[in-house]
Picture 1 (spheres, protein in one colour):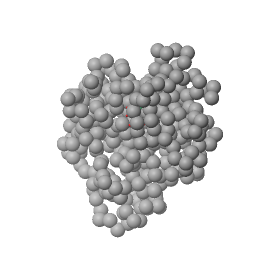
Picture 2 (tube, helix red, strand yellow):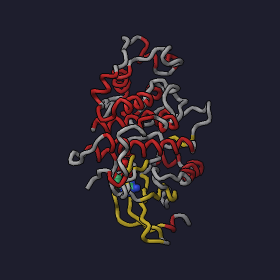
Picture 3 (cartoon, helix red, strand yellow):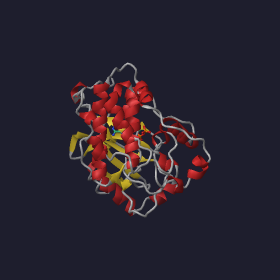
Picture 4 (cartoon, helix red, strand yellow):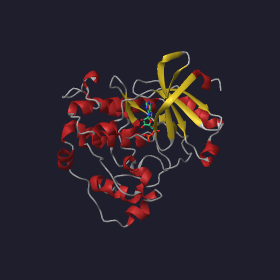
Length: 314
Ligand code: ADP
């Protein structure tokens, strides 16, 4: 209650599937704008709200990085719902940006947005937080063109090794093969796969691995990356859904470099090399966020566009 009183809530900004978002500001400083996100939780979910989950969300308030949306506070409302008080970011999201064909951009711009994204992911992982839902419309743009990772609804700390986690997370197009195969022990590598999908879609101006169903998602992935054998990915055949998907499937080879050059010319060979490293099928072989930031792509020509020079919407 004390937390709630620190903010004044105003008119409605927008509505999503899980929340209604209101404009607001700090009571102590009306010039400090916020977005108040009131979750639309059903009864089942409300039961899931425990002191623990609130504590977990409050833990996210401590994540402080220029490329991560600031979460100022979390409070419960009178009707037993949850509200999040967030940094106000009214300039749309990255998916809206690549879909808007009145905006033109090139390889240097993609490098700049991608780098801000990778910095955010690195900071989350360094802080032992998995995002688990990285995608274009969870990447919001600030007034000064800074890209900010948002919507930590599914985020949680890294599980204790040995504690199973649900594999039904991450929007389908961005879901890595280990989750589709039913792995319950995963780490930061799931975010790295999703991040690579976002970089590819910036370059493609279309979804990179779109599919109609969960089952089809795995075949869209293997059309590009091939079907891994036990040698490519030790342990793959003990995953829960391996047998039904791969046991008697005809072998598929990964696409050659020429496929990548043809589909993603804006990334250049170094960008393609980075992307393929981030999309290793075997999560153990996938680049970590730290390795991603050390890749030559970032320092090679072209230099990333300066934030103030990035193209933007409206
Ligand atoms: P979705 O991701 O399904 O669009 P959200 O619940 O995240 O749903 O947001 C709903 C709408 O509220 C967004 O489309 C946007 O217009 C607005 N919104 C969300 N977060 C912010 C924010 N931090 N600052 C300003 N507007 C926001």
